[in-house]
Length: 328
Image 1: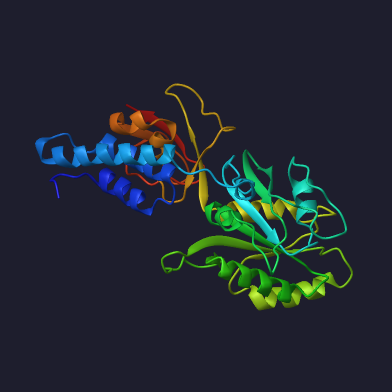
Image 2: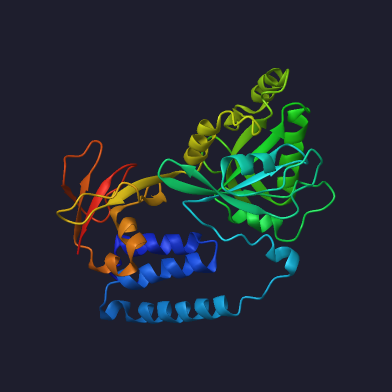
């Protein structure tokens, strides 16, 4: 291994190894190329990085086109994160999407009204979360592209109808996800999985809690699954518990909001920088522009548990609500 590889390089290398998509790999590789020390000992490695970058970009350009059915499930991520809504026929997913976002999804009292994924934007405080309604899960058929949509999302909402045996519905959903080699994870750490499997943070929703005797069914449902998943009763039709749903979805995503400011000016608290928990000052710089990473000297930070304008280095861990001033 070439000498003097920095912690920033090694961290970017780890992100490269963990990347799921070509775009994520290219982004991590750009950081590796920006922060690698420039000396004779890294000359060969720098050449390998350039070669790898060229191959990744070539692969991205020649990526095969997908069929029409699969293309319908290729939903571009927008906003702070993408959350997928799953359920059996007629549980109220389309009603929830229509009520909590700006999207229009066909709503009816008969099953299978949603024929393709429909995205909408769910506002939570000063950010937008993309919520995607999906066709109901079918026991005998999974559309091409459906598993990839779920795998590539940032979190899942599994919805059941509290008036129709919610435990049985959830068992079907979990079984179908298992068949797609997707492991829903609620509470606790992300487990280590076999090659080919993916994990997704998951919130369970018990819909139609306004219906007579529904809360009695919810109590049984909650007792059955509460040790594994966070659970919330809602009524999509009556817009009950929507604020709590938005808050729970945000917590599920394991992200934080921070804010940047220009020296001598006030920060714009309406435009947060959204990053994963555990991110550093360097990640903030990278989110603005990759050139900031190589040029960054230090930052000043304002936030809970810090004195105003505290000077910090690039590896300093940031927290929800921090205000950051970058100096290059």
